[in-house]
Image 1 (tube, rainbow, N blue to C red):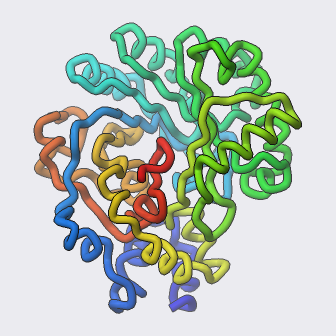
Image 2: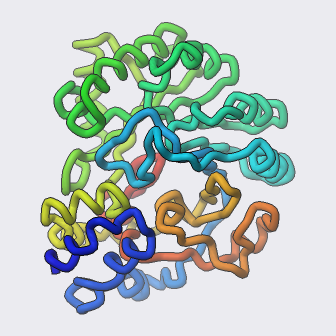
Length: 351
């Protein structure tokens, strides 16, 4: 099977190819049970949402970095970008619904030319929580971004930042040479204005993704280690650490195939399936929106082109909260990544 996957290697930017790899092979042969077969005995198929609490909006795939594990396949050459018109549709939805959290992601969301307008308008309409998923280095990428920490503070943004590890070599191997040093500098800038510091309400969270074909360790233990090392060596403080399992999508899928780890990794995910994690998967309380306004059950489904089911309305122009909260969630084998071990979501472990 590895040889046939390698033959398709050059087509992995194509979502159809990725879905074929995930659906066929070891799953198509029956060597591993499909995700559906795992959740059917739990009476969790079809997988259904709960109350939608988070509107996660991807404002564009452009990024100043090209990280090896990136499931978005983001980079400086990506041109997909959300327009102000589409942003306004998102704001209208939040203004007229009980969805309390706006979660902005990318790429580097700050690179969207209307990013600041979007955040400011969200504050004006009273969005309770605004999350920005920042890669940190964007703050130092260009003078026009140097004031981002102050902008975040002014708009009471919760900053969630990726930092693969508390040591330079592991971080730079995953995200590029010099990224760790720039990340530390950016974290210092955020700390200086109150982010992540005791006695303030300015939240700074970090995200850990494993650097290879393995599951993340215990979130609480990793958070303890990160806090000890970052404080001791660099004076950095932060609020919480979220561990996220790498899903077999885009660049990480390419890595798994290139290193001949795909089958072993999928076997590991299936063997680590945790029934308790199914209750907390993020597709139950989150709607993911792409740069063009189409809706998905999660950010990972977005990258595979798996829109929410048609009966729920697939574009935010047709947003209907009641239909969305009664839809069937679209699943495939990559969903094992969110239910392995302690589970995984954009907010960290779920079980």
